[in-house]
Image 1 (cartoon, rainbow, N blue to C red):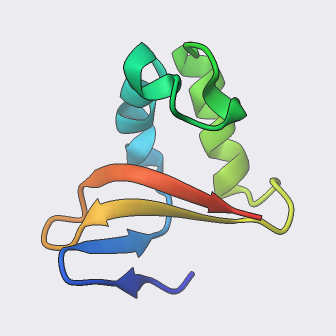
Image 2: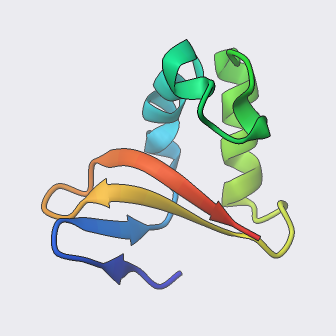
Length: 83
């Protein structure tokens, strides 16, 4: 997957080690209430892992899935899903 590089962020591929960061977002009500219908409510770790695995296996169809990461560290900030 190609990476898109900006001045301070990068759009990069998902990785297994993103699970703790994704899960921290899916269990935070203030964040979830502003997300798409994928995370309308808190998700247990197993559910979040299943979601991540579907992205990694590309079983989500023709959509593009990118992690929004800090450019210098590649640390996870969020994600974007495009159909």
